[in-house]
Image (cartoon, rainbow over all chains, first blue to last red; front, top):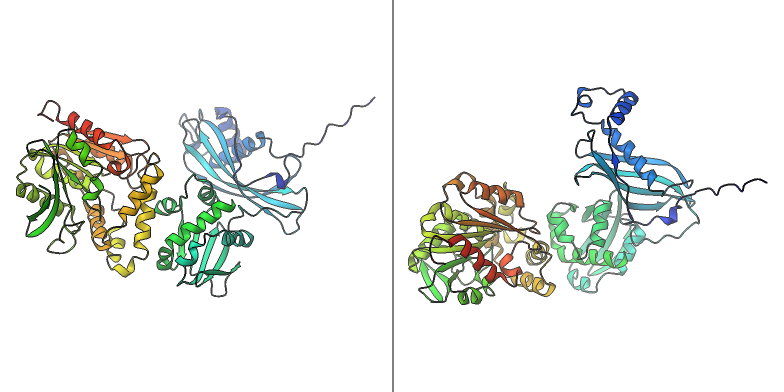
Length: 271
Length: 271
């Protein structure tokens, strides 16, 4: 008699990830052994990494974050590889720290082939004192179960999302833009969509309007997520605190303040 | 008596309520606004036994403009208020102010501690660090350079109100704040961003209480605490759920202010 083969743990498929999902790992203490092992591996024995007050080498945080990510059990055999890591060091990690990982799914985008997709995770390594030590994003390539289509209610900055936003705009926007002739760009990280506006109507939504955008509202994926998830529309709060910015014609950007508030309302409605 | 008073050669509108012999408290409004911000507070304060004096600063509300044009020096407002006190026969009095009114209250404490029974300075620190940029504010003094000013004031007000403010109340506050002359408001804000009282705090001898809302995007509670730490005997309170306009946001504000004034004057003279 032979035992049945253990089922393969595929973890999640591409379709199982949704923008805005959040996960928190268990805590992990940082030990003197960690420091010694990482110094041996990296060869970086700069005085900063030696002695009782030593800081762990920066990439140690990335390594630990990836390990804590694995402990969440999200990823099995459907993961085909890691595409990128964008990382910022906020505060030193020292022996004796206890850190955990806070993960937010920031972006999911199917590849052209349709058989797989890129899943961008915002990862924050936080100490038990609540202070963020390191944070950034990593993107994994994940096999898809089927070939789509995908919901674009949170595909910020894409043409599909831009069309959905335009369709969800409050009719008041017609009055607000009655005398306006221009193009509003909406950007999330490196994706941008243009809403061509003429006399109160959005007459075209495209990757790039022929004359370009009059101005573009720019935010990263986490900020777009906050824009659509906050209990009240936080457009002006985030603009006033510098989380949102604009490129292009600043005068027209300010002039359209109320219209942009409604654009964010529409994005909230479809998210 | 409520009405117009000549101060420095111009007519100022001043509300004056309660028993003329009761302990007086002077209530100061925020940038670009008027004494109307205190309309829900006055009756409660009168009932608590105060004489309540609410001036419209020059160029605001029903007061005539300052003779030399919009004021961009908060010290000039402080001097004007001392002239108003003289004109209305106020010898010693308490002051409560918010935002530029809070900083003007601090300035009054610096220049006339001997005349003040108590100071409650809300939503103000000793120095903003030069923010917002006076240069940008000066550009916007040209009316046409400040597009959608009213919308930005309304939505910006909503963004700095505290979480505890009822939505209906928040909408009313924001709608009322649209009533401003942008040139006067911007001049006020230039004064706000350039008035530096840091080196003079130690000279304050009157009882003083600094108050800041935890949800106030425009103030850093640590800067307010720092200012309190430099003023002999000063108290500091951070209000949970409150933003930049405590006297407009908090339904029970008259009792709260009465409590602060009683604490400040306890043991010094009758409150």
